[in-house]
Length: 100
Image (cartoon, rainbow, N blue to C red; front, top):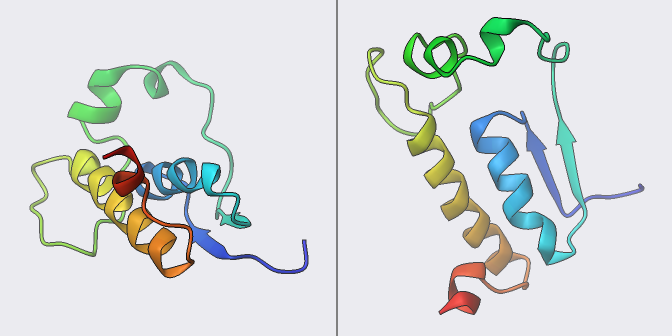
């Protein structure tokens, strides 16, 4: 791939959701990830460990939050809004508008 329309850094709750949201647009999307694959261990499959005990913390620096609440749903919702904004700027229209 010589060029990309969108570059997403990080494939966590926000980046992964954004990539999936933009995929049907036909735009060239490059995903960049740092680090190893998520280890295949029991604690990575238990909702209690991942979501309640906050085993992994996502980067939610785009909005204020507190450390006692897992902000994954807010990050995911924000990435969908960013996706619509990017699609409009790239001339592909908004998925939300197309669904209406």
